[in-house]
Length: 110
Image (cartoon, rainbow, N blue to C red; front, side, top):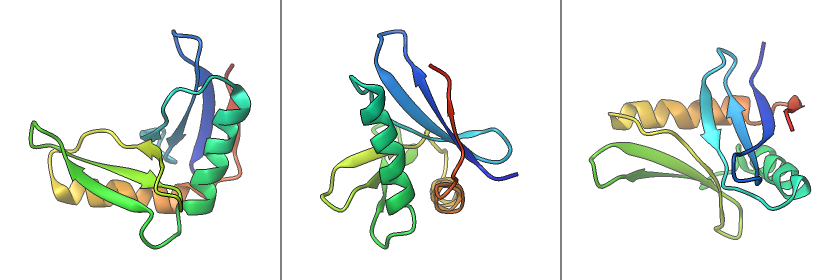
């Protein structure tokens, strides 16, 4: 089984997407969108950019933990990861998005 995307509605009424690895773990989450179509476009952007050189950026939070973002070609953030205790965990997370981000599966949970 490969990874999958899920589109869902948050408590604030906005639409979000997340990417789950084959083991069910969340590996990428989006910002909130006003419309479901915009969240769907975000999924398509991850699919398009997950294999692109330079699409990922690893960052360090103020608390010393690491996370990554995936960016579109225009530099806009598409999604971000959870926090990782180590840089190697962050790197492994990016690799998981590269592997699972091309998934055709997208479950609509709205």
